[in-house]
Image (tube, rainbow, N blue to C red):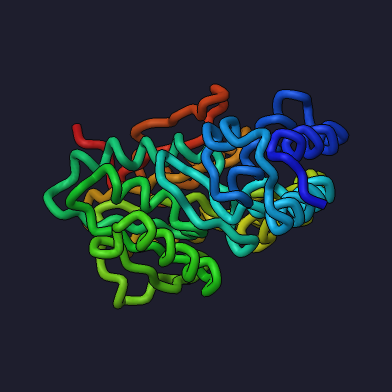
Length: 291
């Protein structure tokens, strides 16, 4: 059954009210309608009395059903924005969250002060959001996006091309729990948002996360710290002398992550909060603090 765009929006918003607050339901309904119709919000408003095609009506209904089943909006849309960059998103990668801007900003600020043409590794890159944010701001950086998942790397490669960064960004398969392959070479900085959810937390994750996002990108071992130990223990060999390591971590993990860094010969330089004022990221330098 065909509907006017205005009615299609209102009907979808009404359905979403069963799972969302009114303002959020309206925002999601608008985003979904723009996506399935290919129109901007302004065009939807101008065309609110026009009839949408049967294809648009059916696509809208299918999207609402997925949302009502708990699937995150980013997966329904197949796209998301991080640090101003448009990204393709599938269930092979985590959805980039505003929390991760904290580690991206730390890496960007330090990247701007590195030597000319710095080499930067985004380890456990997923969609490539952090490494691409760095490449977009540090204009001479050569960025390597690395992940164990081939499917994630395919998405990261698409996102590099989407943002016209392929000339300075390459994608390679690498296991963060194992020593780096010699072909990777040496980096001025490694940045990583590794899996850090504990075994107990995995059981308590909301359905929208546990039911849809890739578990291999979430589970960080029983205490959530397996990847920090492995990266500090193994990937220091891939850093140039005095190179930098920048981590995102989970709520309440800051002290433990900093202790791991210090045990492995790093000097902690800065700890940063996310937009919700929760401690979320750390920047450290490999080597002793200069006197």
